[in-house]
Amino acid sequence: MSRLYLLRHAKAGWALPGMRDFDRPLDASGRADAEIMGTAMRSRGYVPDLTLCSNARRARETLEGLAGQTDTGKVLFFDTLYSEDAAGYLRLIQEHGGPGSLLVIGHNPMTEDLAMAVAGDGDETARAMLNHGFPTSGLAVVRFLDDLAKAAQDAGYLEAFLTPADL
Image (cartoon, rainbow, N blue to C red; front, side, top):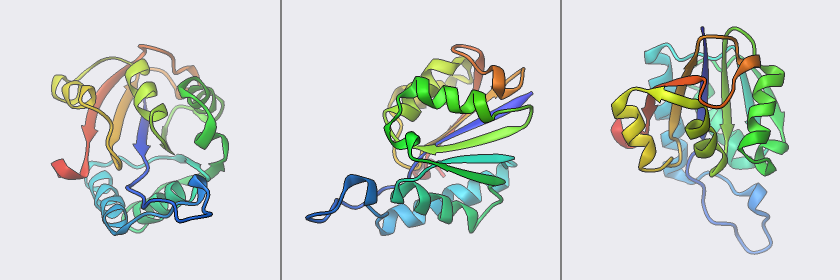
């Protein structure tokens, strides 16, 4: 059994004049939410062996907030997690996934699209929450019977969907 944790970055402020979207920092509520999600992950035993993180500033700062509260395993940064679609996210997961657990810190709509695509089944409450959208700092927990190198559409089970507002 393996687990995939899909986390949308925490809430970021608006870009200042001349600032690229890629460089937008978290705002105060985003920093707090990242810490809340880190605490929630630790308390539920959601500890990844490996983290794939977008290189965008708001994703890196989300990782920092998590890492202050829980172990995030080995971390690899990818610019492509900012620009790829859900299929590109899945390719990265397959390339780096194994029998353990993997956390992806990315962006929407990719995190939401991927969660919907790989979770063929799942907990009714979690599926209902996910169907209402994937807010910033939202975390989808998808369980697979096989290792993540073989993750595929409809192959996972949505075990949980957490948002800071629900914690």
